[in-house]
Image 1: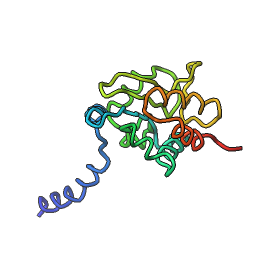
Image 2: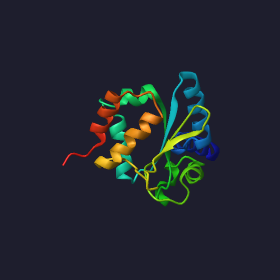
Image 3: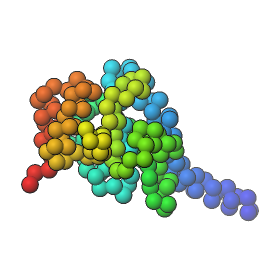
Length: 172
């Protein structure tokens, strides 16, 4: 009888355990580069956290009706969860913190993004010309640098980049 209760308890607990386990960052990156190679795209990697308002804004802007197709047509996008609070550590992708450190070192700020070619070579990242993290670009000067980086790392045309710039720029 005790064994039956234990088995039933485990069966109900198992979906919960699986639902909270996140994919390894290395697996997601391998999948993304393979897809990018197949689709002749680059990989847009965004490091984010559940507590980060600017991370949510970046995701919202990239997935907006005006921009989503442009990003989807040019990039395989990978979102990696990092730097969660102790109570939300289960949301992190194992290995993502180490990958983030590899790309940005000790510099602060989320979101942080990097654009890679289909072989994993860095084409550009979210550091501006002063070495500061653009994060989710929103000010006119930040969006201007974002436009340059998108132009360098994609096949986006000037009209498409203008639409993205309009979406990201905070209107006063």
